[in-house]
Length: 117
Image 1 (spheres, rainbow, N blue to C red):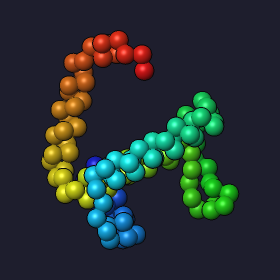
Image 2: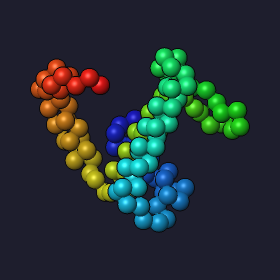
Image 3: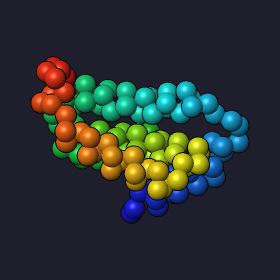
Image 4: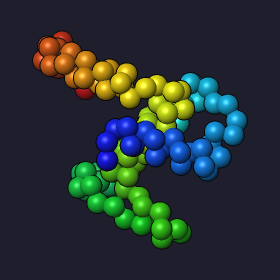
């Protein structure tokens, strides 16, 4: 799946499921991304290094719902892509920004000047 396909699918699914029925602020979009990151952190807090194996398991209350650390990371990716689609950001801008940021990161100092985390 390409980045463009992922953005298109994430946006279409969110729209189909009613998440575009009312306006959402950029702050709301960021908060939703943050909530998915918090869920990934919580999964790691509960399962520790075992969570990093990338295993997917199924919710006991909803056996069709996948769960796990990697699933939460994918929720972050889906939310980012849906935000991009919702905001009408072109794939050209996404690819350019990603390429430029990766290029810049290669020029940064070790641990960005000594950061601990």
